[in-house]
Length: 166
Image (cartoon, rainbow, N blue to C red):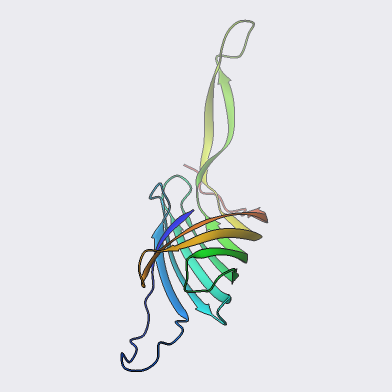
């Protein structure tokens, strides 16, 4: 996942000492432009932060997700460098799915069959997960940076009983 992010910070007095910046408001997209993110992160110290992220997905598997996370920065919150995070997420999706299919024509020796799907309906999928991630933050200037994130997670999905048939 690649996030193009922008720091949105409170103005500071140019005559006073430089203060440690604790807030980051981030927005971004996936490389395929099918998922959009809005995130807020607050630094508890120079190395530890907490935050939350909302995302919206388009396409065949559209839906939204909400994530809370805490990060540890190897260098500092407002410097380029490696970080590690623990996160928890909830996602809800409503894709079109099919309840069954049949083969047309029926398979026989040496003959290929086409699958014909039927029972098209909208699924109601809820997904809860927790995970560990790592990444690298690269600052382009004081307010603009990129984050490269990868990780593993484990989760559980539930499929709602409500179907709309067409």
